[in-house]
Image 1 (cartoon, helix red, strand yellow):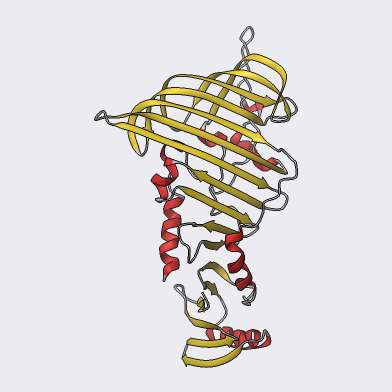
Image 2 (cartoon, helix red, strand yellow):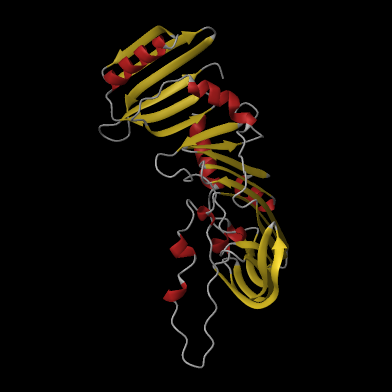
Length: 349
């Protein structure tokens, strides 16, 4: 079944991101991302107090947009050239639980074989776009607990876990529509490698802890294009439209599939739901007999006609038609005891 292949591809899509960070299944808690200042050991008398840690997590905002651009070049241990790029856009409306994440560049192609990775999240549904697959450009994943389980969520503190602000360069300067203080960066820690030297600047919101802009360049030993090497990299992070009207539009490529899915009844206790190109798969604690009766009732009430039925103990294959559409419902034992698996195929795709 094609959905198995797509799931494998998506697992690769969310694998470790070498130079450009690692996937996050959820935003870090404020405590993890920015320890409270009182947790730091007090300065001895006569000593300068340590700088307060950078803080401000994105999940505390109602909505936002952010961009992150990074490029790296260098040489591997054999002296061969290495190059890598990443261009990321992330749009979020935390109040509505809607998100749009798009990554392009050589790093994405290295991970996925595609030049673009694009994901939309609407509540408990995650839509993955594949513009190269014209027959099935949209795959849908369902999440029962965390609406961002499948999404690559960018978090600055994961890519740069330590950013220590140094000299104040400007005060009250407006950046991305926000009044900020502009600092030189005194100390920097990254997941990318060992940086021998760097220059970086950071702009922090005056009325909060959010990083509004962060840019810099560094050189040293790092992993580039999946290989250890030595080189340099530069980056720029921008946070915009904070708590403004950020609307995430539903992707047009998924509209046909969404309409088709809305016509298929799904029991309330369905779990492990997955869908792709006319397939809908889920598990249920209901017995095969109960589920067979459920579909014979619900689909017929929805205007479908039961045209064929095959059954053998705990296995059912039901065929329904509606106009030119044909729907097949396969009901059988799941992988675990007490679980029934349902596969619905819409042959109109």
